[in-house]
Amino acid sequence: MKSELIVDVTPQEIAIALTEDDRLMEVNREKRGVDTFAVGNIYYGRVKKIMPALNAAFVDVGHEKEAFLHYLDLGTEFLTQQKYVTKLVSDRRRIPELRKIERQPACGKEGQIADYLKVGDTILVQVTKEPINSKGPRLSAEISITGRNFVLIPFIDKVMVSNKIGSQAEKGRLKQLVQSIKPQGFGVIVRTVAQEKRVAELDNELRVLVKRWEDCVRTLQQKEPVTLISEELGRTIGIIRDIFSPNFTSIHVNDKAVYEEIKQYLDLIAPESSKIVQLYSGEQPIFDKFDITRQMKTGLGRTVGFKKGGYLIMDKTEALFSIDVNSGSKKLFEDQEQNAFHFNMLAADEIVHQLRLRDIGGIIVVDFIDMDDKSNQQALYDHMRELMENDRARHNILPLSKFGLMQITRQRVRPAVEMQVMETCPTCLGKGKVQPSILFTDQLKENIETMKEQYGRGLRLHVHPYIYAYLSKGAWSVKKQWRIKYGLHTIENQSLGMLETRFYNKKGEVLTIPPADGDNNASEKQK
Image: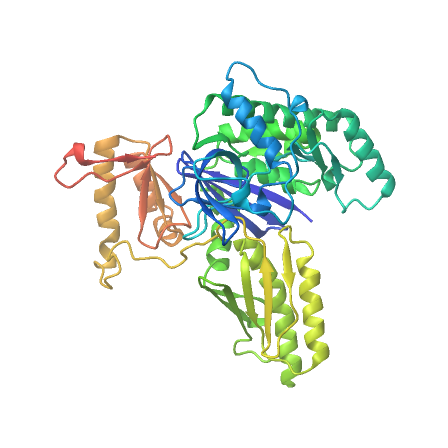
């Protein structure tokens, strides 16, 4: 299987698309320049409320909504951690060694959060679930630093090995190795990808993780409560860390700085694969070049088609995500039972793809086409379980109910990917009336002349592919005329609406068309 990572870097966000055999499988978007309260971020917060009925606390970490911390997320070594943090912030001249901290009694599973926390207490916490809808972040007081081969957990002081490593000999080797190289006072979870790795590589990564913890401690010592202490690696690096494999054939990036960041990280975890990182410098938007935009618009709408003419209707509610399976107008078999079974099996593949593509979490209810045969129902259930085995998110699947509904729960750590695939007409703004289409190029030409006077030659004009095809028609095309007369580069952009246009300068900044009165002070330049 061929895997590719396409990274689109803009001033506002970084969008990351994962493809497998040229099929879009995952899309992640990360805002730039703002605190996104991403999973893995560590905060020095302050307790605002204690809720005995929920056995939980609400903690202020700087988000508009107070973050949620359940008692079971305190961790067994919470008291030891609190003592260390208190000692750390009380004496800002030196950093106490973790191994010298006196161990406190462990927190039992049946305790009450009010026995350990009160309003006004300061606490070191980590985001485990991003803010979703009206809910604030979910927190854990058990801090962990994730790497490719290890997860480092301060204060635990034990080694655990992934159950997915089948060989008992390899498990024993890794456990003995890690126990010999890890510092005292730290616990380590050995991840599946660590099997068969050399000692030097594992030791190097463990040192890096310990260094990240030490940097976190130094930052905490200098900060006041309700502040960010340590930021998780960027979404791009996080995806590479979690899913990188020898199947990766290429990573395409359109930004020099992010390109260097990815290359440096691959030099650390897989030096032999660093050459697969490629810097994209084409004029066409990178998502258009690799067919990502088209797949997003066809795959992220309310209606999603699949093989043989079937389609899914996908609706999101506050309580759950519903998926309705339809066969369309086609009938592949005369027997209705066989026809329903066939379409349901095809739909299952697309449903699993959609769960991963949109990163849908929480409760999912699938309304399959009704089947009376119990063996067909069982076969569909087994097929869904088989398809979901490769899903990295924790999940649970129930058999079909007597109403033909399948219930799925899937781990939700961040908001589901959403994309508005319907476009508002940029000319009429949804009113339903537009200027005569024959005048479109005349108006566009006027805008080009205005932009040339304001910003000079060498601008780039992005248009819809249909408009681009019209402008490129003929040997002496309009596009060529404008290139000679105005020095204008015309580029097709699949993300634009039919009559939408966008001007860029040589630096890639979006330019606003100045008002008709020529008041240049009213024009804006956006990044």
